[in-house]
Length: 576
Image (cartoon, helix red, strand yellow):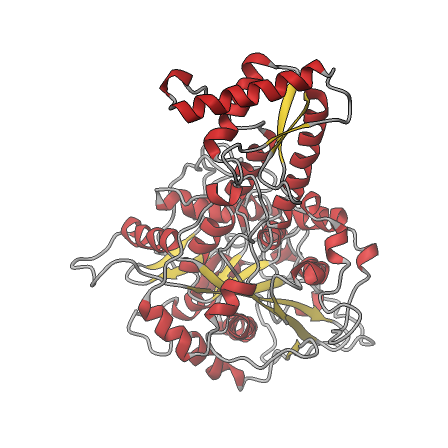
């Protein structure tokens, strides 16, 4: 389904419903550029060097399109069902959203690489659609600023030395003072006002407005100025009693805060995916209005908006976050963090740990393909790997398309996220079936972040727990503990599988002793095997019928392949 600024809130309940029901979400990001440096490195780069390049790209270029493909296992049909959303993203703040000038304070730089422009145009990417109809957004950082901006009173508080003004400006001050004194002399009747016009014609300019505010502060503290924004007197100032002005100002600030929330846009989805708070930012009225009105195209609605409980959805997602899947996703994650969360930290270790705090289960299909191979290995690109695995019949993947969804091809973010989802399922299954305990126990030489957590995103810095992966221990919503605190549960589960015996050393990466060569999903009517099952992580969306297809996250398989990505010139990189 294509989602833009016109149908985003209408589609939002369905997207959130897919998130909370999904085992995983595959993402793909299209950017306006991925490199702002010339040439190639003359010597071997460090991990910090590679991150600095990604950080520089995310800070100088923009996200133009994001694809989400949500996947879950359907026990009735013994297949994976996926649903895809392709979302254009616009860095533009809608004109007129903030008459007090917040849009100017949040002004963004838009830049594009000619190489990326030619590449995306070759693949029929519509840049004007992205800019004109893309979904707006405010990052966490920008939302904080917006609410701060709206909670403050008028900013015309700096006094001007009247002796420095020219004759015309001083005459204007006398004119304003006379008008206000006449209004005070009438008793300042409630509900009445006096209008300050520009005696020189046209609207009041910035200097004149500041002088009016200064005169009121110094000589008439019981009165306040209100700028007229509509009608024939637009641009003039109304003088009213201060208590009335304060009430009206508070009402305007509340309304503007709601307007800012409506511009959160795609950030709402990333709050949901990261277990953040988003329900209070959504006005149910926004989601109930069809963008097509009473006529025209009417796609199927899979939910009743009036009954959709955003608070309940938020609470569920705080307990369970789907696996985040991507292909070669290091740059994608850098762009996502900078665009929808906060400014990127200076140090790569801080970045890796913060990403893990937001997304505690990450799978990079390129890393899975490259593990154990040299950087010279062929067919690393998404579409090459997808083509290689697409002939594999198992597991069965069925993509559900919304009515009227236009056809798309490679390098459309929705199409690529769908390809990534299919690749993830088929590649994970194949790798899982072929992997041995010895292979999974092989020393991992991936780059790992340091043993101290960064400050930021509300996470305190604290010492790391002892772990073979140097994982940091976070709070309840942190990432690393989702593996560490379930260690005992994992071992217990593996013993149930009869993989771990009491008379041999415990292996963190033990695999089923004899998994079936070709797993056969069980029909609903067939009795489940007497063999005990592996326990999924607390809160994980997982069907026990999947145990021989994609193992639960507590399984040793994900110790080897989960929470890692590939970085060109560096190799494997661990988030924990």
